[in-house]
Image 1 (cartoon, rainbow, N blue to C red):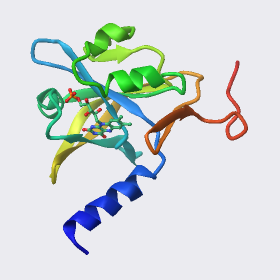
Image 2 (cartoon, rainbow, N blue to C red):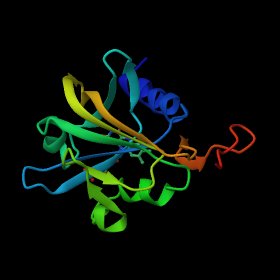
Image 3 (cartoon, helix red, strand yellow):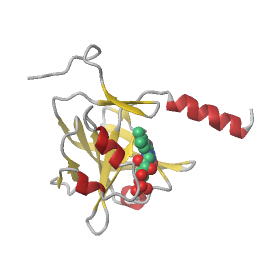
Length: 168
Ligand SMILES: Cc1cc2nc3c(=O)[nH]c(=O)nc-3n(C[C@H](O)[C@H](O)[C@H](O)COP(=O)(O)O)c2cc1C
């Protein structure tokens, strides 16, 4: 199989793998908030509580994530589709498009997510054109909302018949 053929099939296979969607945030050395849309997020370990995600070396704010020592992962709610696009778009003032505030750990926390996991960096691993960030979860907040689904470049909420929404 040629490299081009393999890469095309790889994109097709991975693009069809359904995921949730997150926004990962951090702060620059000037204490400015930065963030991007991420679906490479996964759970790793319960004891200690570890998660991972990977960042493309081309991401403008990469240093804030690889050198900052901490980040916040927002597992988006089904109704946050515009925010998901905003944090994947160039030339947009992302944090002017949402309600957010600094946490006690000085991490930018965006309102309205299904869950927020504040993490300190446990390990970084270089992997091809990405860096894998493994985070130890230090704080978790969960709202009674349904998370977002992403599949073949489409976003949506989990259908009610699949997982009835919690209303209380
Ligand atoms: C659904 C979705 C998932 C994404 N997942 C990742 C990811 O896991 N890692 C990554 O580096 N970029 C990911 N991206 C792309 C970044 O969000 C996008 O390139 C962003 O604009 C990068 O920030 P920058 O513009 O500041 O460079 C994803 C985009 C979308 C729409």
